[in-house]
Length: 241
Image (tube, rainbow, N blue to C red):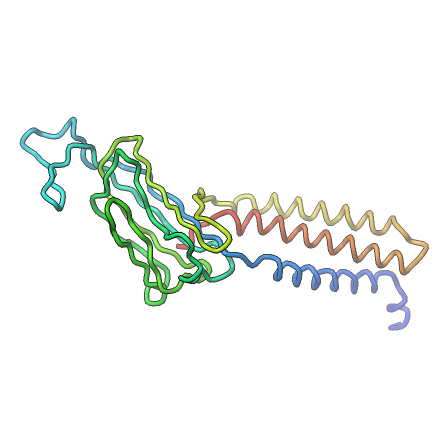
């Protein structure tokens, strides 16, 4: 019975599939290591002081005793390492900073949340009208959220920039991709069934060619499936918090 099983096409199809999955996982693990510093605005600018509707008896004073004559807004931003490798301090080629457009001024700021604060130890330091980001350790998925209060207009923009080895700081939109899970799985199943159909219809007369072709097709199929899932679920920029 065992000999008959070994000589059957189903047995070798199963073995080929297992080998293909192992090869795919190994290839995926070795090809997906990268560093990716990203940021996203989690709270759009909200007006907290309207100069046009404020009472003439009311004045807003900054820390340096200057009267604020513009509208005041508050916003929240998160910054994190979305990659698979640690971003070390020595990787920084251009300091990571938060800057505001010329018509705005940063009035106040604070870190509201951070992942593993005792390890990461994120800091914000204000120099002139910019904030500079410092940390001790920025492991994969480590990050922090901060709040900025600033004066300006509706057109005032707050951005982050900087450069580490191989990449700059990228602004992303947070996405909730889990609702698309069933559709992605359906697409993967259809692709795999189609690939298996092609395998069983090809080279069925010459066994070694048949199994070689089957192994290549299945490996490619599983690899594509991993990549689709990576793009949808892991590059969907889901908040680390």
